[in-house]
Length: 102
Image 1 (cartoon, one colour):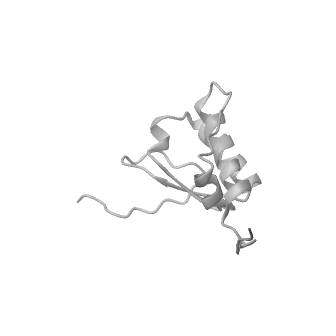
Image 2: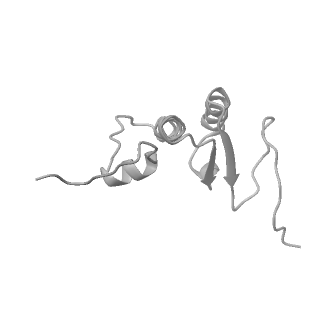
């Protein structure tokens, strides 16, 4: 018995990841290491070049944040941080206030 089948070699990586119910087992104890590994994975597998992080400054020290910036620059990944509170500006940051209370 023969079947007529077709397939597309130009598959979407994200569709394959969702189909396989792909999970990441991170063996790290530090939050900063897990974030960096996850961002690298997004970049390598999905070619994501911009990552948005919400209120990350509430969870990382200034040293960890600097390390995150350094690693993202090495990987050529752009970070967008959305913060609910104005924190001290680091030298490598560009700050844009979207909604200022007056």
